[in-house]
Image (cartoon, rainbow over all chains, first blue to last red; front, side, top):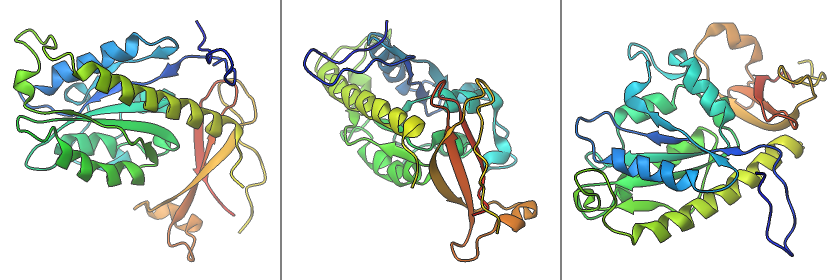
Length: 200
Length: 63
């Protein structure tokens, strides 16, 4: 069903759904970011007019004997080309983001330009991946992505989900809602710009 | 340099695409040397999107 603005607002009907995949940015064994990424996919899927997918960097067949666009995977590039926005789930490793996440992101460039991105930080400690997010933001900017001003921070993540990956702390849901509302607004706005506003 | 006067046409639906961005890039391949803009210090990549289906495309700028 096409998305429509509420009564009285500027009415806008999307001709096709927004595609907002979630990138799970770690390959670590026993990674606590996996239930976070699945939760983000679930919350996106509940929204009308949005299609999503989970992109697990551990499953991408990127070579590691080269770097940048030389390593481009056709399937990942097609997903990035189709995407209107990205959610990046980024655990904090030694105050930074994971090296393989950077390797994967660097494999594309033009596919990202004028598309929205939001970052979800994850950590075992109390800061919810905030330091890793701060390091990642300038990278995303250079790739041509447009960062939003909401993040979600999963601190002491081992306490947030139970053993089967079910969310134990419902307080995260309104935070995710604010994050996704901003991301979707930005995705719609940037899609309109990409497709209809000419660079002068 | 010769300007890119011709529009980019969508490979999917054959509609004229919208030129919405130009990004400075620094390829390492010498085959791109002819596109180097000495003032900007790199190569300008034009980015286009189809207003009908959303498909993206890019090409080296010659402006």
